[in-house]
Image 1 (cartoon, rainbow, N blue to C red):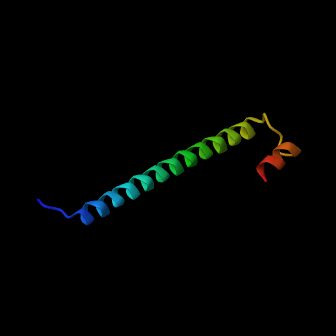
Image 2: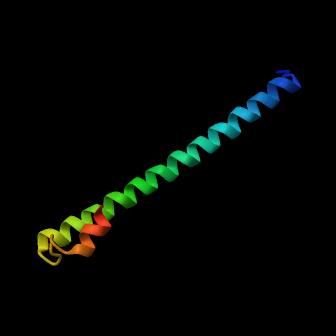
Image 3: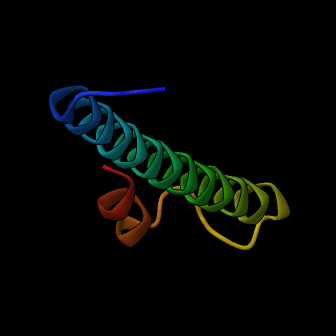
Length: 63
């Protein structure tokens, strides 16, 4: 099938944009997973009683 240069160029641009969007989405998903893991570890520490809720360092870092 014959395609014009302009059609191929815009198709390539769409593919590039789509690839960038997928990369950004994957990075955001990875960062969200990492944040969820950090929050879970913090809750586990608090529930286990290892960290004190009144600890000023903990309050500063969670603000």
